Length: 514
Figure 1 (spheres, helix red, strand yellow):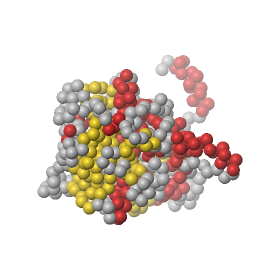
Figure 2 (tube, rainbow, N blue to C red):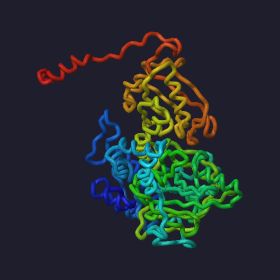
Figure 3 (spheres, rainbow, N blue to C red):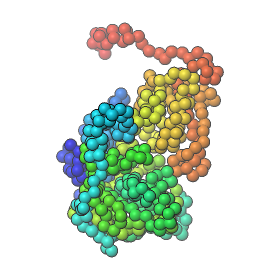
Figure 4 (tube, rainbow, N blue to C red):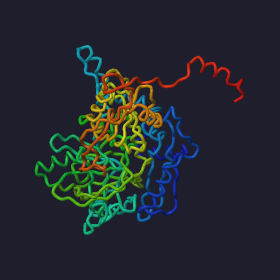
């Protein structure tokens, strides 16, 4: 059964031995991060690494953690809650990601009925779709406690992940910039609205706390939150309403990270995953609705005319992202349920919690990617690629330059445009076995003939790019070459034993005394 809120999921993990409670007094500045980093890079007790043939069902990632005694706050802090394949499956209430993938494909790209009878048959499905949309109710437990004038961000156990986070005079931040803090909200849903259509968006962007009432809202130019900001600014509106939501149904953090098409709501996806619509309640001080079952909600306004220095920040790339100016967010209220739990995550060199969120998306959205690019058999985003640096792709090759056609299609598919290195292999290669992929690069690639360089958008966190958010990308065709693909000699056959001999050896294995 789906979980109704964060605490019910935490209790479930606790009962299943997947959670550790830390009662020792800990500092939210660096100490929680250091503990979690060590835990996230270990295996959970009693778990075993995934077999090579089944890379998505391992249970690596360490325990979920709840720090019950955080210095400077009366609120416990939960972290690494989604930090394993197993916990992601439990959060999404599935046995495997692949079965969920088929269901989501029907949501994001439904087949349109073409006859009256087909339309009538579609009615029950449309009714189910309507039932999973968000529903607004008058009030919710997320507002059991309301603070306005006395709202204080620093009363929350907001963590600092890395030593130079927010540091002046480092990574592009002027020494005389407003100091702020190095503490960041890292696992919140950021709720905004399109001022013209009223459509909601839920993103997950980092938020640097400057003081008790102010923060810097970091969103990339490609994100929907930034697009909403530009609309408010173009209209001449001085302020944009925004809510920072922590907790609620456990599917919400996942939905906020999904690369959905522009016309598919994150809240609709969350309702789909949850089996029923997400209940929303109106905020106290801004025209916005937020999940009724949230633990903590920070309401406020983004100034469309004022920016503030944000960063540097230790990011999922494994490096500090450079400081830059981002919009100023001013708190108008903090509401929360009684005895709330603060949800956070550490961002840094993988594996961290975001790796498991990303791998779930990789599996779940494979059918959608195959709908956009039917040539793809499977793909893999290796951990060392930090999501955008590497994509390994398997195709069934049918014609010359087929691999290059696939590369170009990937660079035109939503957030896949940020992929810096695309490697395409034949269908008999396991793309999840990174040694196999590297073997076929070495065996099948002539660098001059088989590498394609292009210019285009890159993740703005890519510090190697010569320009902000733009630079070069390369596709590597590691398939066996055929006539029409340049100068090609005959490609030899890969070594393999005959099936008859393999079967005979299997039958006689015990006789060999091995």
